[in-house]
Length: 240
Image 1 (tube, helix red, strand yellow):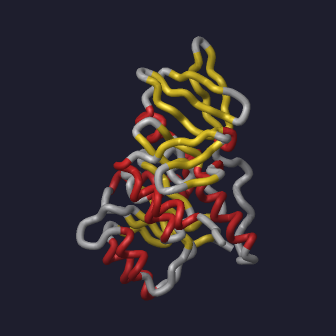
Image 2 (tube, one colour; image 1 turned 60 degrees about the vertical axis):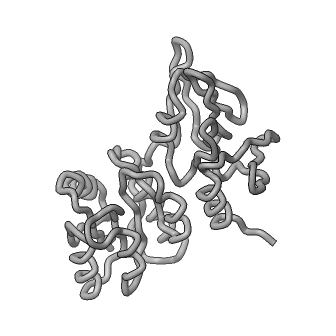
């Protein structure tokens, strides 16, 4: 059984890229590619789909507004050039959040997540593709390229002209900016809490209005990040 996919994006190049990616993955069927939210909404009132690749910033009706207007909400993977919608996407329970430009490996990882969710929910879905997207990065440390698994990263700290990557096992000094790291890391797994800190969301051990604790270390929440971080923590925490 094919997974019926819908693309919604006002950029022709972005639609072309997504269409080519879908064609590469067995089990996906592109049923419609829409250039705006109104066209997509009209289609959804006539035909149900299983998975939507949805841009956010579009004229007239944006992606977030479209989700609220859908007659029945299927699984949604957001595709956008902007990180600031990551918190709201958690609240809307989207499947994944892809930052443009989207590498095929990252796209494939998001699709695999759909297959896994569909199978876990006992929904009919084809088996996931054999290969998965990378769950690691290579960091330039001195004269070496060091492989680090994303799940091992605790936090990243800005240090003048470099960043310190703190993992479960070690600390690595990388000559990159924290803004560069923010753009490269998956927005669904990492959040910037301060001009000097990015943290792994699932590694947060405790938090308050002004700080989070990771790996036994208390990290400050910056004033400019407070509202976004607070919304994120409230949306993902299972508290008593």
